[in-house]
Length: 240
Image 1 (tube, helix red, strand yellow):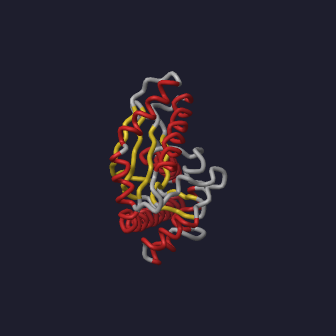
Image 2: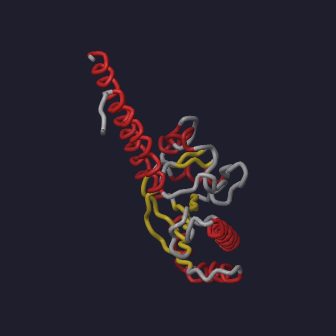
Image 3: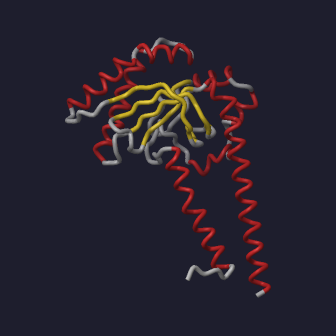
């Protein structure tokens, strides 16, 4: 009995320490995000639903809009100028996407908006952007309830090698000029901000790990419940 109580206390201490470390790491990432977010613009595309055809249309609309921006955007444009350009071209972007959807059998509305949103930690090639709130250019298709796709629009990480998710050197140079050396270095290097846990390719290069920030947080909950259930078993607690 004493052994079981001792084991129960040890497990409780372990998970308490784990949760404290997790909270401290998240807090550290969000603090970094607050420092760098004024110089970052994310790009967010939300599908109408999780049906296969809606997810495929989401990717087609994404490519259509990115191709349009890549061809039309002035060179060496800054974040403020990019936001102004997007605002001025809002109607053209929406109409272009809706026309494409209509041509492919869908009459879904497309909304373009500039907003602020929470993003999870995400790796893009050898760079890792911490979780936190960022300015974002958002495309919502229909209800916008499907899995989403995102990347970093400024500095440009959206127009990357789709297979290897290579971050352009020009984008790295822009970040170096915008951020402090400490904050820039925090985005690089092995093990930085859960890089290993998040994967090696960003959403600009692959759509294998799609999901909203809320979905990512929700995915963690069953793990915690499973741990607590294990704790109950170890402690001899029964729900009847």
